[in-house]
Length: 151
Image 1 (tube, rainbow, N blue to C red):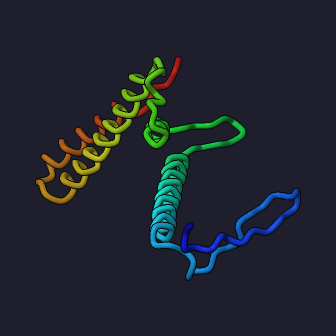
Image 2 (cartoon, rainbow, N blue to C red):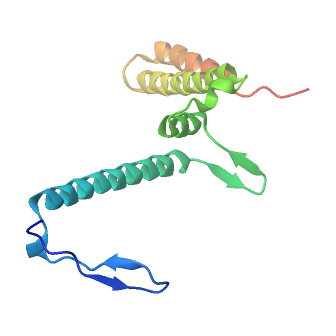
Image 3 (spheres, rainbow, N blue to C red):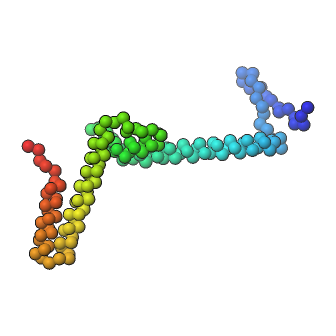
């Protein structure tokens, strides 16, 4: 025989018996600890879910969706795969092409920045004959970077 009273029950729709809500004075320490553990576990799951949603939101913010089509940056696909715990791009045959294009675009941006710095250097710090030479070098860089016309 136990010292605790039997929980009250009530009949609900369909004839099922459910335990009535317990009062604070009837909850044992073990039950209270189990409730705290459940709350911590549910909070951890909620935080993980929020973090995952935020990761996906950040990954898709740079997508360009229009009537012409959809552009999804390579980095976005990598982030989505990482968040999902899988290698999204491992099965794409042209992955190296994507990486090379991104590297080439970054290199072009760096060279354009160097050309701008060269112009600034030529305009502000050196004598006129040397300045013309540096300006010509910067213009040659820009010409080399300009898109070629198709024939």
